[in-house]
Amino acid sequence: MRLISINALKSQMVVGKTIWNEAGLPLLQKDVVVTDGIISRLKELGIQYLYIEDKISDGIIIEESILPEVRTNAIKKITTSFNKVKGLNSQSASLVIDKQSKVIGEIVDDLLTTIVKSDEVLTVLTDTLIYDEYLYQHSFQVTLYSIAIAKELGYSSEDLRVIGIGAMLHDIGKLVIPPDILFKEGSLTDDEYEVIKQHTRFGFDILRNLHTVSLLVAHCAFQHHERIDGSGYPRGISGAEMHPYAKIIAVADVFDAVTSNRVYRQKMLPSEGIKIIESGSGTIFDKHIVDAFKRSIVHYPNGTILLLSDGRRGIVAKQNLHKPELPYIRIFEENNTILNSPYTINLVEYPEIIVEKVEVDYVADIE
Image (cartoon, rainbow, N blue to C red):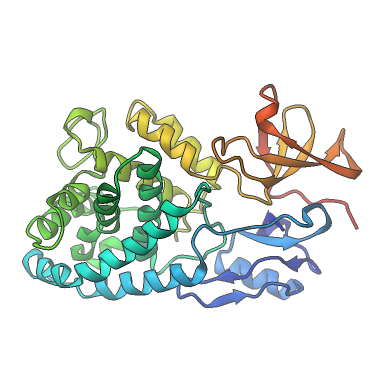
């Protein structure tokens, strides 16, 4: 299978991987032969990328870190729990979250079991459509990334659980923001943006009085938009004043925001999102955490075509566990000529070669 953009999708191509919506229902099944009508419909839905089966990607396996059914079940539980908070004041919301804390803890425990036992870097899902339920999906994704980063940093199982719950509830304060502001499709006014920024304080107020979870969870909500150079909000505190858990969630939060579908912006590829995080390393984000993040996340998912600095073109065939930025590449083109016998190289063994470009719009001239 290989990953291509909707712009490169052509009639008669074969879908390599089922596309799911946020409700866990299939939008387009694996093995379906693409038609012009299907392409038009996918564009209407805002699908940007999908996997296809073709000759150059034959045998390349796309494995998800979290199974679709686990994801769907978790997001349904998050949705149910969070919906109980909508429209409530902070005190009432605290009572509800206290009652829902067991469910939230169970979701985190399930994710911990999967991520901690895995020896693989976390693969970013690039084919899940998320619009209407963004807050629920975002909370789930940020939890995944935060746990993966914290695992790489060597945190204990107890710490991982608190970090996971803090990540799951980091945006809970948004549920008391007026929906017409929270879900506004156009640009926010300065006053509306100030209201949005209050979600960190609202979250802190909701979570600090809970009897069933650590007070650190409240500080995760309060501080996840703070930055180590003091440029964040709501208090403008600097690195030494930020809790380490909040520093982790801050990185995970931004990465998921830029790599997710939104009504007002197209999502970035994982490698592009990682560059955004890298650009803030040591200035707005803790460098130690950014480095751990880069070791925890797949930079170029299997099935992604890359143009290399020596002019060769290949497709990502396998990940390197400790060097996810340097995967195994199946070379299928040299000097703009398709090879009859592709071969695989390990980029770790070729430090002089760099990835010039991710080519999701590439269309191979191969029968």
